[in-house]
Image 1 (spheres, rainbow, N blue to C red):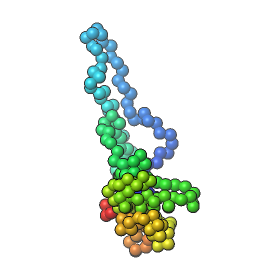
Image 2: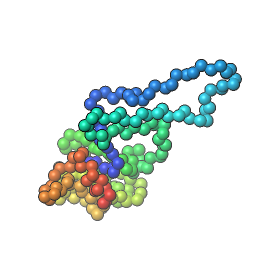
Image 3: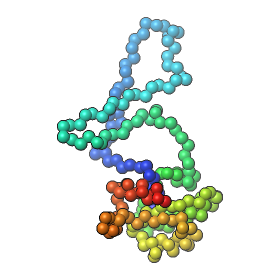
Image 4: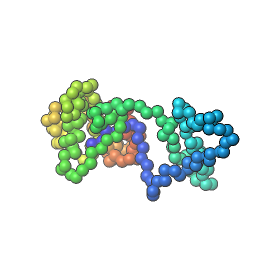
Length: 192
């Protein structure tokens, strides 16, 4: 099961990632002629400034220049509290995946979570919350033979479970969903 977030990306690193690549070293301390009393050091009330991140290097002649790394210093990001869908397990607006061997119960667990949320219950605790509409991506399991009967056994609200079965091509032929279909995932999320 995947609960898709409209704002996620996919990155591939060809080798070890150097966390310091492209970040200039801190400037060397300059000697001072003042005494320690006159220069008490950094003010604990004012945070250190973020290191400057240089702009992207110019592209080689003839190369496409429409892509570059999106970098931000962690010190420039304001922390915010997590809005939990299921406390300490599933956060709202995030991507979550269940993986495992065939027959290990992934579909049952995913549908149990979806059924509880569709009826306004927190999974496993049955505390009440606002009912949710769930976008459920499933290309391998039959909707009529497997998903609908299991969801009914779990007392889910079928009007709140939307199946994303794949992508329709221009010729109306169904195709499997892949990571290159991010615009389709965003479309499905916005429509549900």
